[in-house]
Image (tube, rainbow, N blue to C red; front, side):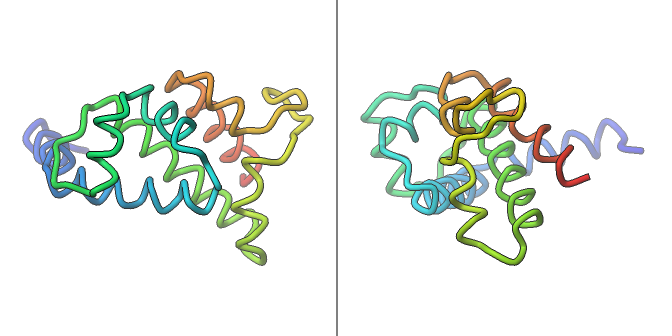
Amino acid sequence: MATPSTAHSVTHGLDTPEAGRVALKFFFNLMEHWGCTAEEQRALLGSIGNTTFYKYKQLPNVRLPHDMLERISYLMGIHKALSIIFSNSRDRAYKWVSSPNTAAPFNGQTALKYMLVGRVMDIADVRRYLDGVRG
C-alpha cells in the first residue's frame, strides 16, 4: 500500500519537465501513426491553442497540466491495449481508432471521432472499452 510520501513522490515524478517531454514525445509519435490532423491532436490534448501546440511539438522540457497528463495516460493505455489485441498486426492496431465501430459506445462512429468530443471521460471510455475487450 502506498504511503502518503510514496504517493507524493510518484506524483512528483510525473510532474517534472522531463516527464512532460517524454509524454509529448509519445503523444506526437502516436498521432503520426494514427494519422491525426493538428486540429484533432489539439482536441485530444484538451483543445489547446495553436501557439501552445506548436511549442509542444518542439518537445520542450515542460511541466504539463494534470488534465493533459491524464489524457496522454489514457492514450497510452489505448495504445497498449490495441497492441495486445492486435499483436499480430501493428497496422491494424493503428488503424482501429479510425475504423467505424458498431459496438457501444461508438454506435457506428470511429473511436477517434468519439474521443474528439474533447472530454477526458470520452478518452477514458475508449480505454475502458478496450480493457474489456482485452479481458
